Image (cartoon, rainbow, N blue to C red; front, side, top):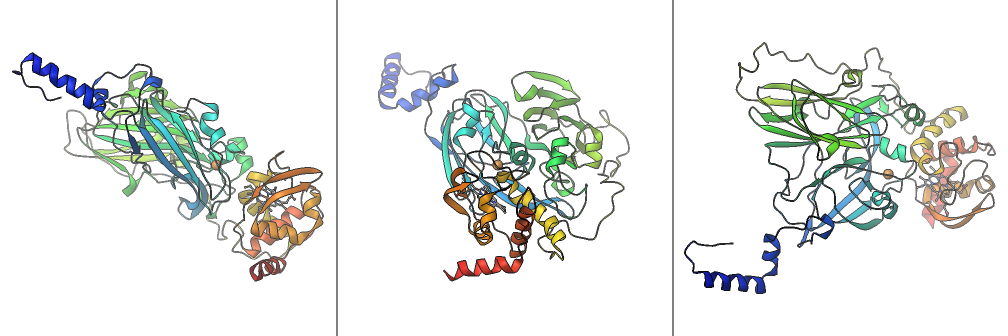
Length: 489
Ligand SMILES: [Cu+2]
């Protein structure tokens, strides 16, 4: 409010009266907010500015609580895990971790979750910042090509993980379906010079670390917690070299650090720095002068420090083989004047380079089937098993047992065994409506699977030759015939 010193009091009262009567909003801005966040009224609407890691959107600083519209799309896509190694990631917003969401206490989030039409699977979202059933998961289950909307009021400040919670949950998380949502207090967090977003995750692939080609997810290794890759921001080297984060001497740096898991706990450490402040577990408790902070799977921490000397600071999981042999290593490049009073010494580069998998050979053959044509039924079954693991397993489960009421069994399925062309057609074109499998009724939707003739032949040969089915062999020619019939219609 503009007030000058020498306005007579009656005029001031009059002015105030006019303001009160005519402009309720500015009054709302000035009066203190209720202490119970549930009571905070929202003022206007805002579309959330979502950012891919390692960037974060600007602080909410002094903005009032608003209706905050979050538009997030689930995208399943192939990206690089490390040189020559590809992986099919499932992402919130196209990146691992998913887009950073910045809110403040009292915001009313209107969440729009879209599942891209080319995706193969249904997904949902569980936000740890949500007070309500499943953190939103129960209200957000969405099939490919669909959008779902749900709303929640942001009550607790802090840094929270969000993740997919669709069965099999571990697999959705292991494929990269996690991210962070920050809830700032009214007035925002104290200002700093640089802010970054980093999230650790562990990955499980059929091939060992560094084995080339498209590597499918390995359920058994995941259950054994035997990670091939432990990385920051989704891949080896996502924060090194020219992708390192940066700061200048004298600046304060705040890192929003999360751990998506699915399995491993992170001993987060920055080589060459001491955390001046840690918001322990992402909450309100502040610890000072910390060397290494523990970040549980499904948890987060905010760390802050001032960078005093130039050089490269190394971000690691101090379970140190993960850093130097599995990828959990990032870099913060600090530029500026040396300060010999704080640190003097030769600056060497290259001491903390990632070592790679060590003794692993580089095999010549590509990782999975698909592009290679199977030369025998045995090979068809072998390649088909891989297609199954990355395409069908999530719904029909590891041994074709399905999930009661939702996904019919492929094991010993009378429906499957009765008609091979109908089965091919289901894989090519999807299936909806009522069907009866082994005496149980299902009325759901299977989406069209985007696979080559070769892949369909292999996966069905695998299915028919597993779990008590009738051992039929499906050839690419049979798939082609069904596809052509469909195209002719
Ligand atoms: Cu999912």
